[in-house]
Length: 48
Picture 1 (cartoon, one colour):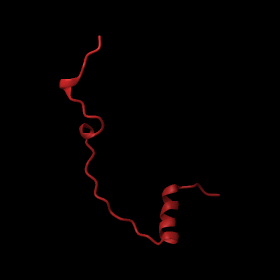
Picture 2 (picture 1 turned 90 degrees about the vertical axis):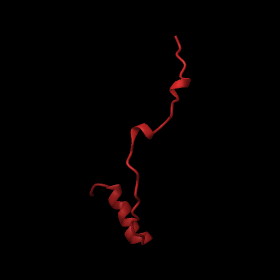
Picture 3 (picture 1 turned 60 degrees about the vertical axis):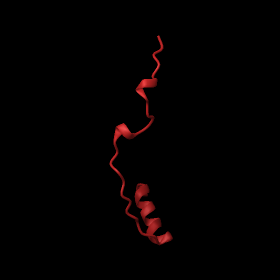
Picture 4 (picture 1 turned 90 degrees about the horizontal axis):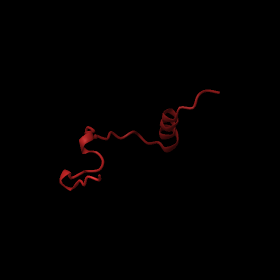
């Protein structure tokens, strides 16, 4: 038995079962500084 490749299986389902075509989605470039929790440096408390 051959290896299971999920990308291939999903592509086959799309083609053979669902009869759908891929859709191109344009994404913005990932910028680490824009990700996650925003921290206001004026409100940071130091615990000592």
